Image (tube, rainbow, N blue to C red; front, side, top):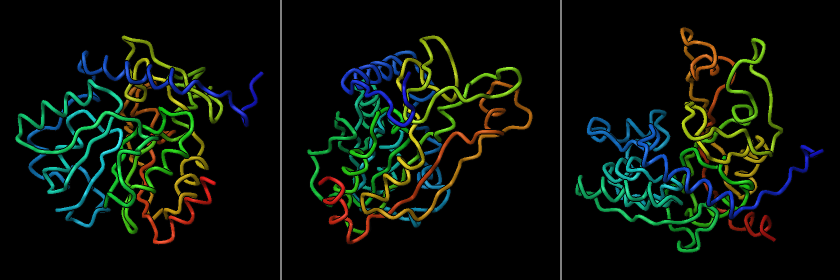
Length: 275
């Protein structure tokens, strides 16, 4: 029997390959998560990107890394807001959407295929902002991801990210005898949807890991970044049917959004973390 406190190690390369292929397939099937930015959203990009006002209202001239953020949405929005943008993603299909959208809109930003845990192509202190939409769930160990983010951020730079709540990935998608029940131990891979199944809370055929709050919040802090704000986007809907995202979100908030800042002394903390 597996010990939840010592979860089995997942073969990283196999997980990477499966998730890359899953997102390439989602692009082909026009999954809702692969829909590029709209003209309406581009008209006021910061209103779309930063409803909480965490970015201060102006990012013109900032060097921004959109991490694991292909798909023709994040890159165009940050570029339209005046930033110097680099988009990195593991999926060729998602990056092809960025190429298509940037060409159609006449936007110029860097597009790189790569792994969020291995950012050696970037210099220390290169970015003013790392924008990281939901994706830490796709790697079995997120500490190397946070360490690389802290390395490439300049002192005082911002890390704005969104993650799947641990309970979101631990709990059943459907009601079991009238309740949502915990199915997955923390640190383990959650149940995966097969091709053709649909849920606003799971991406088909991906491997996702239920990371603890210690791994997410503590992991960010252990790199020398300081968390300044946290929010839980509210997707609850009182009128939704049981088993839907709106109904389940009344009991389990699906996401955790975090604003963190790299402090001046974070280089020392990162060296301690990495040994």
